[in-house]
Image (cartoon, rainbow, N blue to C red; front, side, top):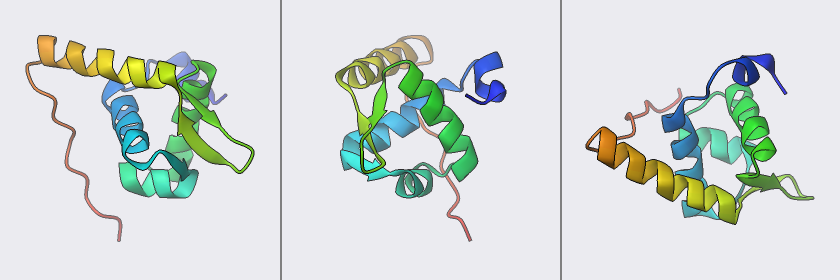
Length: 98
């Protein structure tokens, strides 16, 4: 795993954005997921490594990213925490890649 994510805490809004996209798309390849979340591919891969180690996702034999039951539960808990302590759930608007 890349030391950047491992040595620092992940951005929970990024984690939530990835999970939200997976909820909407069910199974998706990494490139499509990077585009739908607005993340650079290399940054997405680092997050996916971290999320796979936490059992939030699996990457199947075809290379598709799949949300696990644990990942879905984490998303629900994270959204509730944000709503309780921040007051609103607002993911930053992403600029389309050019």
